[in-house]
Image (cartoon, rainbow, N blue to C red):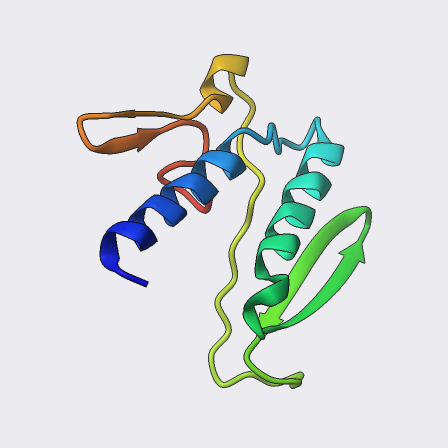
Length: 105
């Protein structure tokens, strides 16, 4: 994929994820955000395994079926609460703004 197409696709995905009000007081939004990521990755050829513990969903993504990957990166999609307008992504000065834009989303 050419660089400009990859940039546009990445921006579109990030904007989609920012729109989820995935805060501790909105657990359904955390679940829906995770489901969106799972759908996005489904056709990638990666191995996806969904887990839930104490009502919190997680997704383990590996290159092959394994319980012991050589490298394990851990991330999160929950963010601290904010005003509703902070969950509306915007681009300015060649930067993306919105809740989670500089964090894991």
